[in-house]
Amino acid sequence: MDDEHPTENFWRRAPQEESAGIAAAAVHVLREVYQVPHPVFLAPDQLAEVLTPPSRSELPDEQLPRFADEDVVATVITGRDQLDRLVSAELEQLLGHPALRDDDGDYAIRVGSTMVFIRPTSDARELLIFSAVVHDVDGRSRAMEVLSDLNAEARFVRFLLLRDRVFVSLSIFAQPFVPAHLHQALNTVSLVADQIDDELAAKLRGRTTFTGES
Image 1: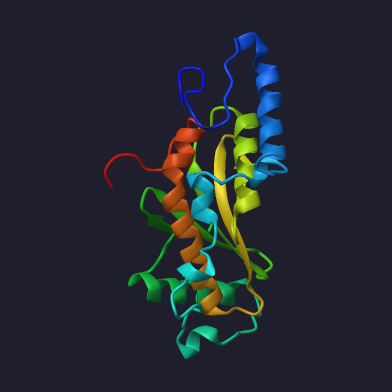
Image 2: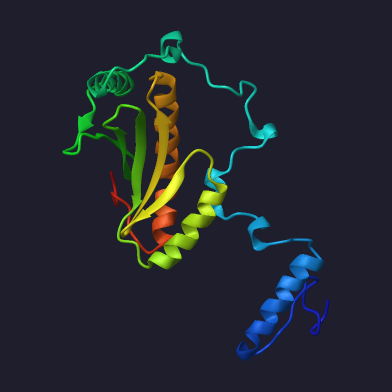
């Protein structure tokens, strides 16, 4: 390496008005030298890494979760009231106290700097587990691009932009109701929401549900 070749990497200097040519050259190097067919195949950023499942070598010896016998018993639901009772009982067992419910009838649980909600649908066929991870998003177009990339990487959960808020959500069948499915869904949404909300809020110039000390 010398002054004319300061690095072994591919590089080129050019004035700003020639940025289109630099971009074309960068794409050419990625495709022809590194065999990258599209930028989506490049390494994901930290947000996407949170959502990427571990490789086989990273998994513990016991790959599948273990559940108590009663948690894998399926119950055929006869209506919304029965589903509410079963969900309430499961959440109380998990939390050690009755779960709070908001004015919409959603169960609400504080998880780190966010809130996670469980919503039984009116037809008792579905449970929606969701969290508003970013509020007051600055720029819907930018947010849609970021969420599209995240959804391409996400496993189980999906990210949605509703007005100026970003939600992460997961939907599970409630007919029949299986406690283990609720446990897994709640754990998944809680982990993703609490791990990703701070960085996602910074990237989208928004704010988390709770800021500062808990």
